[in-house]
Image 1 (tube, rainbow, N blue to C red):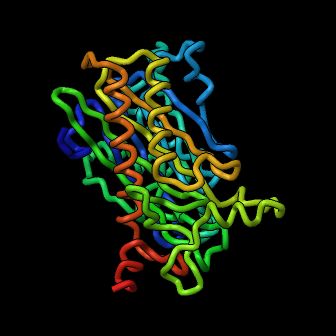
Image 2 (cartoon, helix red, strand yellow):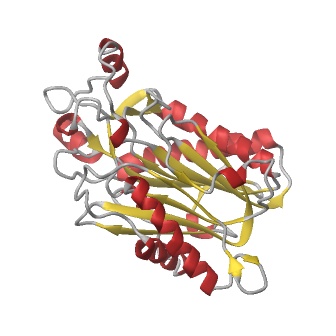
Length: 323
């Protein structure tokens, strides 16, 4: 198995767009030739667009783009901008009078980081698509859908840390699996079992452990709805059916379960898409393993690449404080 670059993925383009003053943004993943697509939603507070069509019982055969966005439900407007761009490029389902691009989306809540009155819109969704077609180098951290992402918010922003967007691409022989994830969870993020970002203690650098805080406050029923969610997209060249693509998305959720504590809470809208160009015959178990590893690496990349913003301390700056 080897690590490869996103720009080397045949059949996929990825682009970010962001407003660093308002601290919000979106990420576009494009399959110009179309791709089989599946989705898995595990969080209790999801915000999505056009995911019902991905049900294996429905007729949707291909998807041409995925939008991951900040801005809460307002951010779903980004999909319209990407659709308009794809239509101009004649990418979509041919209906005679035009083409109709199939674009799905998922959002996270970042309105409390930066300006809550500025959200990703159709213009930003279009810009993310244009950046993808321009093949700009993908940047992790405070970019795209991760611009305003934060983690470990159960005790408020004073003790939280900065999240972000991250990516990883892995190849085994002819098979590849890549992942782009925006990390904005209510809880902590762990690497190899150890917390690397999350709720901080009174000293500002130790970790308070989100799961323990949730347990101690079991009787409070605290409403954390408006602050969270991990969203991502897996890309592969494996030969997959629509139900199998949904299964790979479920494997991607395993990465969230490995890295995020607690994962899939009622306050998170954790959603994972899978896009497949269906070029390489492969055992679905092998594809799932590779996809989960890529997703896990993308989640860690998102946190480690993030930069401090306001009270939201970054992984890198915390490490500096520790000496």
